[in-house]
Length: 217
Figure 1: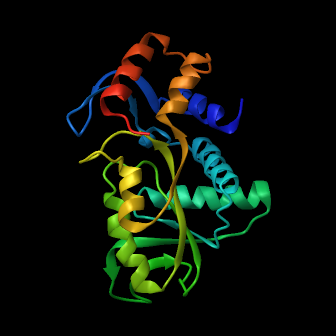
Figure 2: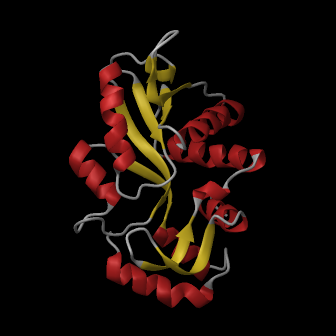
């Protein structure tokens, strides 16, 4: 298996990727659900960091600092930095934001690496639904320094329409000029079912119908 197929199997085995009939926050009825919160053990987080690291290397992002938006991005960025060091001998910085500014001690909203002009940043997130996190975090980053955001790495691109005809990932690029790099896409999941990497052949028709209704390329 390549690392994408391996990740899909890992997600299914961990109860993160499940199939059935689900009502999403958008109100859409979907035949699959991806709950990244079910990655909740030390072993799972360590493995997750390796998949993020592989995606970063595959896309030649060359970050100096990984930024993890509070709160979910914090352990993900930490796991990724650890994997880059342990597996690839690449030592990168970590930085993340507080939800509320600290008014004592060193103060501020940023914890970890102090950002400087020109610093190459990769943002680490779990999934993108409406692009809310990136809209919140960009002003925070830009208020610290004129950083160079090389991209954002996420676990899954659902590749479906947001508020308009574009996907959330496409909207982020259109609005902010930031490329989003998913470890896998929903098309990868469909192929993994077809190839027998994971179970779920009984949901293939529903998956394809859902893509036909809501999907974008």
